[in-house]
Length: 425
Image (cartoon, rainbow, N blue to C red):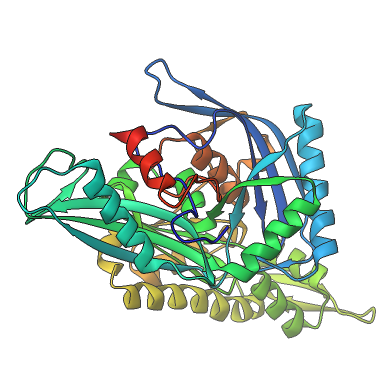
């Protein structure tokens, strides 16, 4: 794990998916740990097929905050409970799992590398040198690379090339989207997984996985912004021309809204969550002053408040989330490639008025996204709250552009380069 050049094996759009047959996905979030078990199939043409769900399990998350383990024993118990429930429903045991991570310290960067051709045709060796150069430019000992997505090659002044093999020119360029997280939190999470007698098949960034589950193909191709509003974090990703080109995570989510309500109304977190679900809205309504709700204050008393008071607590935090995302997009330089559409998903996105507020602040058409490309999902898992977990199965079962395919299973210093080239060209 976390070794230069031997960190991963590489794959490409036309290669085999991460896994065929039974796939298990584990989404370790701040509010819940969810496990889905499915079986991947291929269509008649041998291309991406559907993943049919056979097992679902989820448990209240303990010992996990914003994608980081803060209590190893509590986190183990939550993970074991979720996986056990999914195994009982599927009537099978799983060993390998695809794990989603949403660390607030997630980093995303486009890396370019160039190799001289001197008029020769592009060979496997030239491509290997370009990929290795991009990988080495980004790699550092204190980071764990989650994804390396080639988003285009160039030969001289020609760009947007998918497969440059055999082309002639003076120089070959490759542009890769690299996504990484700090190595320390990754090691702690993997240690926790091992204590549960599971093996991590792949760490996947939640912004990427969730988008694969909820974005339409036109949105992926033409450009769209995807927001997964979880309990502890809100993750964003930009897709353009078929590839993910930017990802980020802001350290605010639905749990912070609940905390604001608990503090503002002097109620417990459980009561605040219930009030948010039943009466909460990020937008004021014309009847907000007349509509009342009862608040069971800690200590046994009750009071009645207008819903407008609740909106005054909720709206500033939701605005802060979207404004932080907007700032990250502006700083990245990719805001213009996100097109005119934002897709919201995640449990916190179900808050009344969130979609309208996103439209106002981000200045994009907004819609709610739910899991797609899976069959057999139980009714309880078809909503936005399970988009990330469903996306992990989608990621594992599809032929995608991500080049970091396995965790630490390369054979030799240049093994991943040889494997990548043999599989694809």
